[in-house]
Image (cartoon, rainbow, N blue to C red; front, side, top):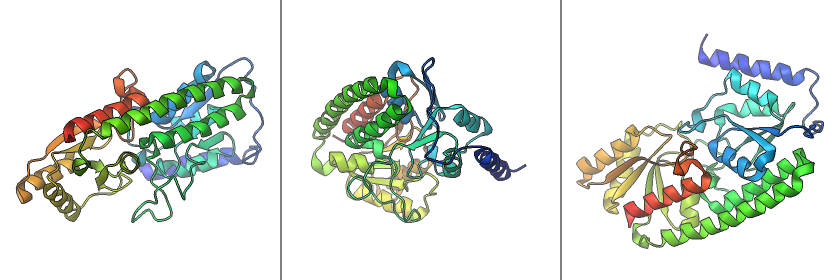
Length: 317
């Protein structure tokens, strides 16, 4: 059986389950959490870390995608669907980040509380419209603006409070404390960004994940692939980016932990051969769509942001 047919059967199974005595969306019954922790399923490592920070000792978090996994191309397995069915609440990014799972979330919402953590962000003031090929959607990489991630924390907090009202006061206290850490982190990133002269604040990465970072902290950002890693770069795009790098004398470009280096390496080679500009490649040193392993410094959201800004500043300043 092909992967596509297996996936269609998986969706069919979810749909059947959703139609078997399941309540309509928006009318799910309360969950009795008087004797146990809330069972939370989070798709990405960034969301899982956020839920752990806010939920504290009252949540048991299962992370669907492990370190280094690319959410753009991730497909739900039968085991993932089972984990969603067993959860009290499912948190996902939304904005088509987990693009191959949209139908699963839609069907699962009939039986399990399912929350897109970006749902309260304003399309007019917070979000960037995605470019060609993704008309009608928005750039999902909102965690690269610490200010936006603090807004996302409010959404997650409210969902936890609705799920477990008995511990709402503690969730809100945890959220307030964590948002103070994020405010300090946001200022730290701004200060570090100023160490790079404005003319050198040009960030070239493997895919277009860092727009919100650039907007928040004053970097001009270019990605080889689009907002989704499913966009295959062509020769014209490689040459355009190589020319941009050479003309601006950019000293370093960056790979990403969840994206193979081969495409950005092609840009490096094109810069050397076509434009006689020697640009360094710090392959795999930026974390974009995933945190590092949990026991590593970049295994938390705050640690990941610090790692990325330090790597960028040290290479470009």
